[in-house]
Length: 193
Image (cartoon, rainbow, N blue to C red; front, side, top):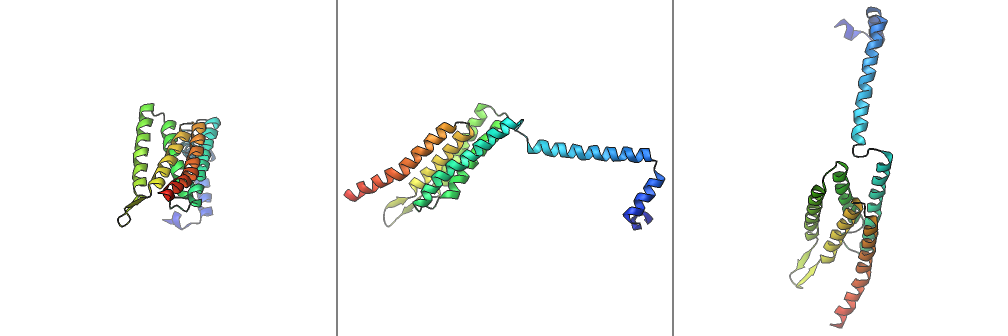
């Protein structure tokens, strides 16, 4: 109880007089090793799935690529005034890329990665279904293109996650072409009716 009342300096002085210097040095060494071990564990957890710098660079390229390609589609949707815009498309593309990268980094088999991709396609389908509205009075359905755009952005993210950046880039360009050009073509056709 008296030791608790003493200041930290007094406690250190008390310890240093009661414990031989050799034992104090050993205790400091043990504490230092425990701290190093904790930091090693922490660092291992942070870099799990990234065995080397080269792999880290690959992951960063894929994550940045997914973000940029999702942003390209999202900007087009924002420009068109659609509810699922920039943030939605970036997050869908980035999220699907992260799912694929995480599975690949732990050594999951191609069958396992395939099941994850199937789950992504199904889950994104539910998100897309939430964007589809049937307007009873007008007998009109709205949101199908938004749902398809979200689904396509997910596919782009999966392609990036699998390392097929060329496929993802071409898919993004085709998506932009379809959303921008085919939409105006549809309006012309509907005006003629």
